[in-house]
Length: 463
Image (cartoon, rainbow, N blue to C red; front, side, top):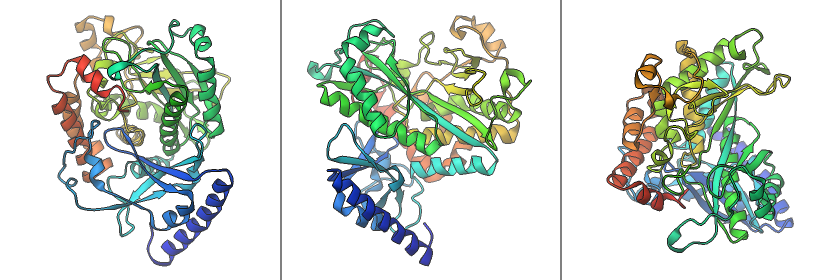
């Protein structure tokens, strides 16, 4: 936020837009607006306001304690060097450009928020503003980053003791599942379309009762907003059909879990850097360096993209979870997959990060990936030769020779690597970095000694 007359003009314009939007929403029968942000545990938190108060909220925001930045997934409160305790308050300001009528929650609308201090200065631990800063940093370097998420979930009938009972019995990827849950799957697609989310694909996945929806690429902040809206829409549609949607990394210990893969593509001056004529794999040198930076940083990025104790129940070799730090062309077992796409599509190429899941705060994830990619560009990072086949089937000497490392196998290991990674510390700033690390340490400590089954039971319905 700016000061003086600039701030007054901005807030005046926001109030004008908010009054128009409130009138529109009221005419459409919307009476309550959910204002969400995602905390460091990956949980979407909310303040709801009556539609009639939207102009006032656009002017002065809504109060919220900063303590939520040190909440764990199970609502335990930890502390960091900068955050913790009962003191302080923030102002939540809705992004009116993302104000959306919720198709599966009649009478409700939604908007993501940016968080500010009470004096109007940006709150240093605001994850959404961090994502925006990193996108702006990429733009300043002449790069446009487009991103999109694949969201996986498992749908369950009501089960005793918060257990899981797959709502369909058909085989993985099978049309039988769509037949069994035809009305449900259609309702998900219709609700997302009504909310302006462009669906690329929706289909059954491998795990019991598992489905996936892929959304169109967008700028990084919008992509993260979309990820939040997709998840809450699926949750609402599931509830209206008498079912529950589990987005947790692992739903049944030992079975294939849920990922939330991140796709990214790089562009300069409207031209895809994945379509460089004559270059190996079609990658411009800047794209090679960006992806090389991301690949190098994947161990530390694991704490951001796979931040739950349950993430390490999911990430095991030979289950397409990306358990090894390597890349490959259309290799679904590699942590970083190069997607070449149809060659007559000028924007078809992209890269997919597979070792990430829906416990991640999507704003932190997109921002952290951009930060590491830009570091790769500035340092001239390279990509090693791509891996063909399952790296888990190589011998240990073969993996060592090719520098194919196992990604962290515990949250504690990932957190230690994150804390020592200066690129992320610099990009996030001490307040956000410290709060995020504190939550990771607390969750690792609270799950220490727990069996995979116990971890899965405590996280199954949290995300």
